[in-house]
Length: 264
Ligand code: NAI
Ligand code: 15L
Image 1 (cartoon, rainbow, N blue to C red):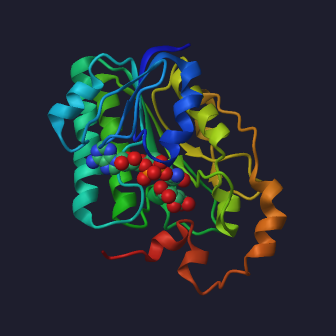
Image 2: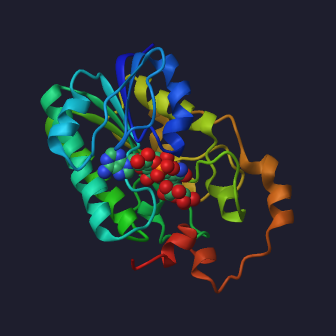
Image 3: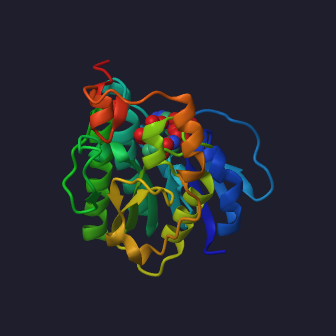
C-alpha cells in the first residue's frame, strides 16, 4: 500500500463509485467525500462530507491525508455559476488546504474537453496548448494551471489526468477513440500515486484503443500501461449507430457534442 490515508473526492459519482473498492489496495484508510450524504462508511473507509466551494469544509476534508484523488465537481458543460463554485473556487480551496496540511501529491480529474476543439484528424500530446470546448473545459484548464503553480511554488506534485470517456462500455463511435475502462482508470490513478517522481504531469486517460487522438509519450515516467481496449466493442458499436455527418461539429472536433452544448 503506497498511502496511509487517501482522500477520494466526488466519491458518490460515477467514477468515484468505480474507484471506491478498487482504491482499497492503495491505502490503509480511504477517506470518501462528496457534497451530500451517500451512505455509510464500510471497513477501511471514512466519510467526510464537504462542499468544494466551502473553504472551511474543504480544509477539514483534507486534514490528515497523504494524497488526494480529486474527482469532485461539475462533470459536464453547464452554466458558469455552478462551474465557478465547484470547479474553479473548489480546486483553489483544495490546493490551499493541501498546501496548509502538507499534502504532497494530487491526482486531478481533468478532461479531454481541455483540448476539445482540436480536430478528430489531429494527434495531440501534453505540450499542445489547451483549446477548451466550453466553460467546463475552461474550468479544467484552470485546474491544470493552478496545479502547475502549486508545483512550481510549493512542490505539490499533480497528475492532471485528461480523462476521455470512462464508462462501463463505449456508448458511441466517438468513444471508441476516447474510452477508458474502469480497470485502466484504476491502473492509471495507481501509477500516478506510486511513481517515484511525478512532478507536474499531464496524462491522457485512455485505454489501449487502436484509434486515438492522443499521444501519451510525454508521460512515460508515470508508468501507466493500459490493459483494456475499446476495439472489442467496435463491431457492436458500428452495428447500433449510424455513420457520422461530417458537417456536424460534433463529428469534426475531439470534444464531440460538448463543442455545441449551451450556452446555459
Ligand atoms: P459525476 O458527475 O458522476 O461525479 C462528480 C461528483 O462530484 C458528484 O458525486 C457530485 O456530487 C460531486 N460534486 C459536484 N459538485 C460538488 C461540490 N460543489 N462539492 C462537492 N462535491 C461536488 O462525474 P464522473 O463521471 O464520476 O467524473 C468524475 C470526475 O472526472 C469529474 O471531475 C469529471 O469532470 C471528470 N471526468 C470524467 C469523465 C468520464 O468519462 N466519466 C471524463 C472526463 C473527466
Ligand atoms: C467528460 O468530461 C464528462 O465528464 C463525461 O461525462 C463524458 O461526457 C466525457 O467527458 C466524454 O468526453 O465523453
